[in-house]
Image (cartoon, rainbow, N blue to C red; front, top):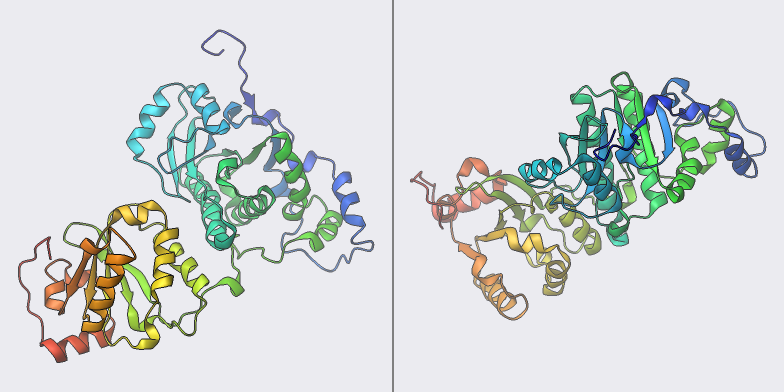
Length: 418
């Protein structure tokens, strides 16, 4: 019974038909026009597996009503999103859920966090945050959405859950194309069940009427219900089917840089994440700058959610490694506000007179708000007053240059301010 005394609306997933029980006639008819004579000796990368299909349920209905071990809530980084799925979960779970969410202190894009189900039939709620979709940064969005599904499943495995009810994680307001997102959802679940199938008994996809049509269309590609359906579905698979875990792998979109120009290291004396950028490793004349933007956002997305500092090594940087001001302005304009708010300092190591002039001009007339965060560092000893040396992975040429120019460094008590 619900709090108002009405009959319970909760749905026992054991009463729902598995994917094996759905008729495959419609799907087969839609594919036969493309493949009249199936080559039964050609197997799909997602072969027919009756045991896996028996774990899959497609159900048109409200995920909040499912009686299973855990259901999935799709939200924003502060876990306060007001979408149809979240609102229904909050309504059925009761007021205690909002109180518990405050203790989680948010959730990063792609992560998954756990709360109790409270008044729901489900024992737990797994909260996750899907990416905001922009076509030019599609690869980053694909990776983040994959992480949502993968982290939900991993959490279910770690907590020994027997069943999970998925909503469609990509909420409408975040703009992810439904069909593209469904491919990622289905193949990620399929790959997980191939590897960890013994840990989960049921996976339910709770969908709306619109979503149901897309899921019915694409489910046979990843969960064929017969050898014939597997064969007919094979030509309909997209070119990118991910790696062995379903994670997106698109070689032509990957940025190939032999020595990465930027990577997260340790923390400074204030506990803030340190992001190291090596100027000499930025091959400006060789890389696609649009891909460089994508690379930067991919690396920084999880770092910039909390306070961080950047250490930029200008050591032995040549004219071929200088990013032009238009690119830097564009980068600054497109990044999320959290990047700017949480950046607390930029340590500009081994600056030249020319680079100081250029930086002053750029931060004075092109980008406001950054000038006060720039700290020029003439030698590593100066840097170590703010960041312990063991917290940075130094390129060998930086250490050699500093020792040659400034002599070996000595350890002094550190101070949080440079």
